[in-house]
Image 1 (cartoon, helix red, strand yellow):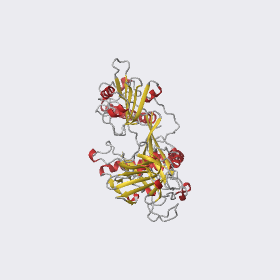
Image 2: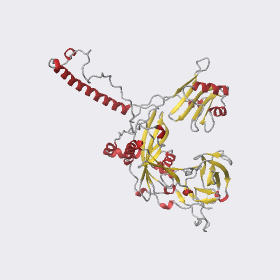
Image 3: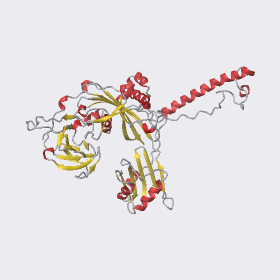
Image 4: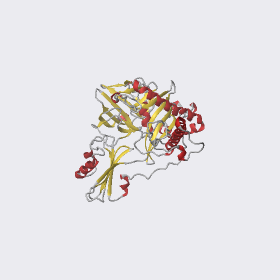
Length: 525
């Protein structure tokens, strides 16, 4: 894999002309120079300067060559961001660029054989290694809305040990106010409950570890940030949306974790009703691998090609202060922007199923597929295989979680302002979900199923406003963000880089598009 490396510092030069002999240097004739005797006077200085230029240029060229070689061969440790042009090719991108080297040249991409061996250092010791010890109890999870004391107390660590741990982390990493997404791994003795080791992670790449030093009489806790070996692999694939999205993702050679990332990228740019069988996409993403294990995937750009209409491309952009000289207070929100640098944003509500197709829309005069009578369809149906996660469309309070009759297993959430959302035909509920519970936007509440009066698995999603059903797809976006002028040049450079990557992926042909008859009304109440 091609990885960046810092170029070695160039030799220190005096402020005098580059290559001019320094006062302490002996004359060339005394340094074993070949050829005619060294000229004297002004001609000597001129000749020395000419030779100095040649030597300096040669040295600079050698430094550049060494730097390029190091960039191609050196590994990466956690902490430094991956440059946009450092690639390990994968999937369709590798096939495409290997087949046509001109594409790689035009895109200014360095393409490396994915099968090339990567020399990895020995992995760091991790707390989870103690799981096999019968005398050790290991707990792990996310902090959520709990603080460090409440979380570790629930995990069974005594208060004095929690205090010792917090004191040990002082000056290294603040852990008293964890974010909801921060995670931990705790190892303690089964018999005495004493701390053995602890890890605090803000991401898979950023992990701080505290470990008891048993060789010290006071059992001192040694804290450090782990120097993890991290690889950033850019991947790109073409995709055709079909009835079973999971199979379509797998068929494209993409990781299943990318579904939610793609859904987030298209949020606001694409009407949920336009994601249906036959839609084609080209996706460029970066996979982070930590110590040789996949950790996460981040979408960088997507081309969305609808069944009718013009293609759309969106690009992830976050200001880099090294590229943009402007006030950080006016930095644009990180996120996905279209080619014109615009980012639509939705106010409160999100799609309850990631990247799902709408198979049946809100229709007050719908012919019921089971009863064969005109009966209003008071919501929209999202396609999904049984077990597909269903999320709360917005933050609120669960008012119902149980049997909804023809609606099957049902969840209803009140969001305030007279807005309620309804989720029907669930296979099951998220663990611990109950009436009266407060939930956040995109929090798991259940799984797609076919309970109740239905003809196949799907999610029926309804919205009530002041007690009356409204079209869920009528919950419009609240506005559009536009990149400030200071960021536009940097955005255009990033866009050009990502366009080259996407253009290097073969767009699936129309012959690969599934039959549209897969989109049918599965609703039955």
